[in-house]
Amino acid sequence: MENMKHVVFGFMTGFCAISATVTPVQAQNYAQEVIHSESYMGEDLPPASASDEAILKHIPDLKKTARGYQNSCGTRTDPRLRTLDLGGTLHDAKVVYDPDSGCWGAAGGQLTILDGANRVVYSESVGAILVLSSRHDGVHDLSFGVPGMRQPIWIWDAAHHQYKFLKSIEE
Image (tube, rainbow, N blue to C red; front, side, top):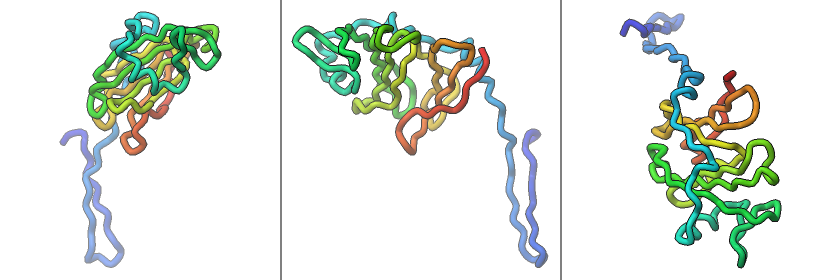
């Protein structure tokens, strides 16, 4: 209880008081978490197989054609896929990566995360996913390999069932 403060709110009437215990918010050291995170480069994920077709059909930027997959730029692509335990409701998340820098720019590709029911919970042009040790609502916080000097931190928003941007930190 050494880090806790006890606060008593009183009313002018003198007969009613409300007591509450307040715990100071611990500053999250995201810079250290990024350094010590598990990282997965999109280009290093295993290629998707024919048995992954049921998963890939849920990726908004991919279309199945007679010659394979095509991304939203109209380019033939070979998506990569890995199941990843992100904890909590995302214990069986699927990470899908479209490695086409011509379409997605300097980041190198489009990374999409699906939950166990194949609903998109994150999708953005990034080169890697970094799984942080911190959690929100039981699900790991994430960062992503993006070009530039700032590292984005994303946290799980259970109420909206998706990752939401928290802040960027200096590398």
